[in-house]
Length: 516
Ligand SMILES: [Zn+2]
Image (cartoon, rainbow, N blue to C red; front, side):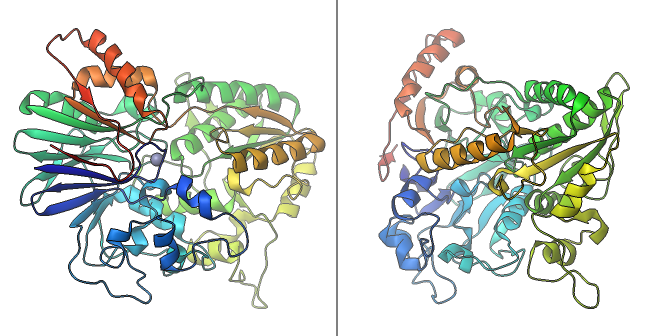
């Protein structure tokens, strides 16, 4: 018998933690942080973090059944008895799917894509220690986790891990972060497919076959398919562009701006490596179109990710600190840039010996990440460089969390364009914070624009996918409107023209157990 149990991810966006059991073996799909639950108890204030392991259990951020046996505070505890979970499969490194990796007992393997692991390690690593119990279980500036087993895939092939009663298949899907995987559990003549978070309108989908396409190709091998799918965008009113359109819009906006003005600042989610690449490409081509020379910058957060990914040569070319941005187009036009530099949100500090001082981002960039000191520039120095009257154009890529307009006022001037390329703020706290930042930008005289598209599947693409896969049973997760699946299936049935296909769906809530 197959049993599915939702510790997290049902009826809400994020915090996926789904247990699947067959006979005596249990696995978890994702071990994410539920922001909904977290926000009920914790915030950004002083000491307002889960400081002790027990805090996570009382607030039900981690399930009580798994506390002490599977999740432990490794600094003080040893696990009790044998683990109720035999393996974990992490779909991607966004924290709502991966946050609790440091608390998993050491003898349970955690499987994830190699790039996803690099992204995770880099994201949790910091020059100074963390504040929450999870941060405290993270050792070192760029930590490693011995029980993580990294997975890689060749293009177009499905690979499998074998357990006693089933196989777990895995392969790539497109999402707004590289290294995203979907998984499928193959048992008897059935398949349980878990999409993780995915989209079908990114650059990836144009170039590569995804795991979902590969499952479609072998649909006839299975008598029954149970699909656990994300539904983030059900009920959303976003104007769904594709990534190519985003790049084109940015390029045109920057071209007009660079005609007369020097500085543009783009705000991104640093994990969105595809977007980072596209923005630089658009900026260098826009400057070139206007006969100008582009000087590109990133902040320390973006620098950290680019350096970690480049060190492992895992992805197709992404910008490198100290190197020029390559942006060729089919018309043989080439965008020209100066080497990419890191803008500090402060100043450079040195020891008496003239070395970068340890303990802040300057020291971390030089000593931990190996960035050349001459490729790093302090904020004041950059501000005076911008003031010089020359022909160059500045493009600064900032992680949206680091936007502090009044603090950055030397750089943000009436002639600056500030381009939001992140998702709309979606909860009260973020909206208030966003409004304050916009107000600050306005009094500084900046011009504000927004270009973004979702990292999650668009409803129209979802209909197409359902019609192709023809799942027998669908369980929605990662959505606030799970009931919407009923409409999508109706549309998919019309599209498929298959009268014999009669899909069912279940709306699950947290802690529901479904057996087949
Ligand atoms: Zn997610």
